[in-house]
Length: 389
Ligand SMILES: [Zn+2]
Image (tube, rainbow, N blue to C red):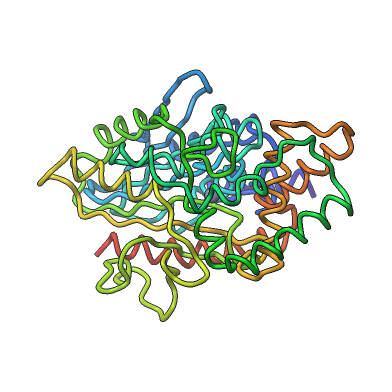
């Protein structure tokens, strides 16, 4: 049986080389990176003009594939993965899986840019943040004075979010964490907690959702990509791939900005298809990549800037919109960060903490993976259709 599978692609071209969907999901940076190189070879066979852009700095190399349309086009779809390092495992799988899809390979007039593992440190070390504990999606702030923003909401929760004793895992620590969560919720309300925690903070460098006090190196990469690939386009759609937040197995389309007259409705027109940050169960973020990238494009290219829209694909894993799911998500985040700064004495505890964290952002469940890829197909087709118009 093996032999037949290996020989068949020779007759049917590149497409059948596509593996079982589960094989796209890798467990290490090295495997994902190698697979991304191989995906580039697939792209090259279809479009010899395709380019691999490499951005090298202290953390490593961030690779991006530019895949021009078969005919000359001035429309561009950009897909970022790994803005949060650990989320690059699913993001990378989605990017490589998309490369193998017939509707992507057969599209005529849309250029594609795939930015692979933006937070390459976090990708390599299975952390959400970079080597300075900076959450990249809280760092992209056009107005730098926001690096000194008011963190009073966060301050009240700092001891709870960022404990300084050695990490432990088990019933006792869970019970304590849960009990404190209940007390805090009673005091401040779940919505307030969610919004003040997730929004980002700039005062606690070892804390969760730390946005940094200066710009990260990836800013330079974004500028290079704008000069090289965005300049000259007239229509642009940007997707930032994330996992972790929301209903398990659901692809949430998460948008910031106003609902009223939002251009995203031209792409996703179904009722409630888009979740807005200001909605009850969601949250707004400062310093997020999407808004910044589009802002920079408009700032740099001025009247030559393309019509640009963007959205976050957020693949839910733990039902974090429900109270229990949201406490569990937070628990995994807190334990992981605590274990990083104040490692568990017991290596088994450390291992369990890391495993819970990985499962939250790269679920091993086949069904989960299948369902998110199916939804990605539906949404990506809509974006390609809109760009083709
Ligand atoms: Zn994320």
